[in-house]
Length: 302
Image 1 (cartoon, rainbow, N blue to C red):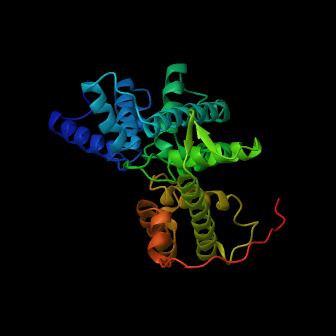
Image 2 (image 1 turned 30 degrees about the vertical axis):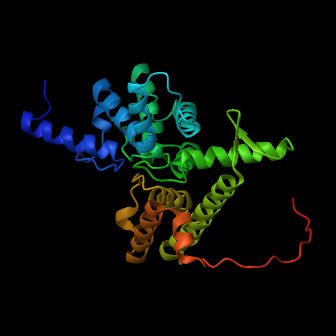
Image 3 (image 1 turned 180 degrees about the horizontal axis):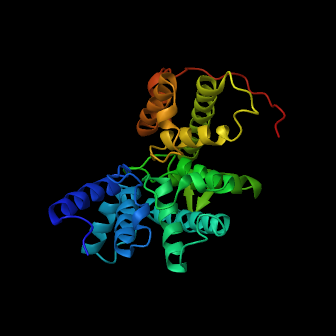
């Protein structure tokens, strides 16, 4: 049976399809999609749209071009996007399953559990819908979601975050240094030093922005409250900041309770997250090239 009249159902379907593909996370239901947690059609449709929107238009164009020329090989960028996206979906779903199996998932049938953790893993990185009650999640599960939100979608997509390729290039860089390798190699291809440097810069600026915004939000909201009175609020503030920076839209319910200053911080974070931390840093930074080199000297690190 239909939940609503056909014209309204069509309107809701179009609205949520656009919202899912654009990774906006706006839902016309007060509980997002929690009421449809066990609906296979709605869940699969939303998950597919969210993933497609998060892959990036470059990857989508390459897939369309490959349909016309089936023998054409995918670029390294597209292969990285597919591999990392799939890996993050599976790792996120597994982590949420393990951490919430006896908690928010305990009362749901097995098929609904599988669908719920997959949906939450996908939507956490980009879209902002939810089929599980976030306020009932354990702290470890919320922290996993924070990490997924910060990583975010892929370059050239409708999602935010530092991006999947940035994450994997930084990860490959760390592995190459542990192995004492001079170059960063992924899928038997060498990543240019300029790309590695840019990935490190993006991750660094993102970390600085998240730390600074969390400190500012804690200062505006909890500066005059002792730790004993504000237990648990730190994670909620960090969750709010990460969600805003990654333009995800998930919240633990504290957004309406923020002070005007706190709401301005969240608004600025959403703008910075959409523009990109490196783009903002380059726009504000000094662009003139220095026509000389300073003397080199070693320092002890690590």
